[in-house]
Length: 362
Ligand SMILES: [Zn+2]
Image 1 (tube, rainbow, N blue to C red):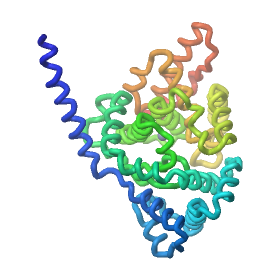
Image 2 (image 1 turned 180 degrees about the vertical axis):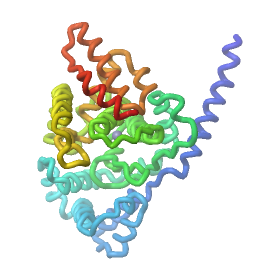
Image 3 (image 1 turned 45 degrees about the vertical axis):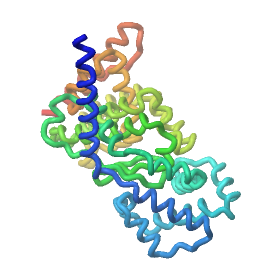
Image 4 (image 1 turned 180 degrees about the horizontal axis):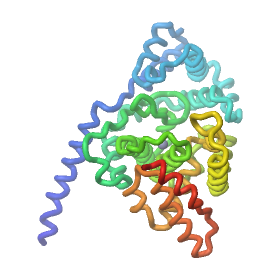
């Protein structure tokens, strides 16, 4: 009886707190870039010629201006839009969408993405008009709290803004803002968008908490593994294979190969440390052979390690050490050993590597 009375009060407090936190995100997003693309697209569809001033105003919107694009990059977007939205060139656009993008053909990925967007402008306008982005950002901020220790929220951590743009099917971070592609967003559920934003907020909280000065390449690489691996647990844990699908099969296959190869990569890093200790770093600066092993910004190895840690019930321990790459390596080893005790064949990092990371962290 007591509980039944308390519930509405609790609910009211919850609704109030979500509304209040959504309000604090009210100024942290823009949809102007994406809307301007749709507006220009409509005019192209009507056969209008778009003047330089119109293009300039598109690239002056927040989402695009952040990129500080070269003229050649602007031309690629312009050409892709002129093709994508022109009804007379529909057959050409359709045949371009049939091509298979390769790792080294980003212009094709861009063109295909805009052609696909041009076919769903009604849906896109509805999405922009009806989505409460401030609420999604607030939800993302409350979700990320489950992946960071309480101490991380002390003080004020500046979280990324969000700008909806039309570009390649990706969400990239620049200048303290997430630039999210509209067509990508249309293909995602609300929960997926919230998770993606929570992934980026994780980086904000971790960057603010990270206070290790070392420029050692090994430590830096493990820091990236931890940063992306933990963030990927928020939005890519279930299906990491989906990560690069939008960039084409070749790209996705390359990523999956790196993911499957993560234990081998860790073993190679261990061997490199032996060479590094024996020969030193001839060129100074970053250790070249290690940088070469570091691909996809550390995502494949990072998520491999973080997933194993989670699978072995050590996520709480990892969260407490979310800003410490040495502890991350240590917890990974603990997880690998646990699994190996039950028939697993996980690679465990050498004591020498752990020791090296520890020394660099002090
Ligand atoms: Zn990330």
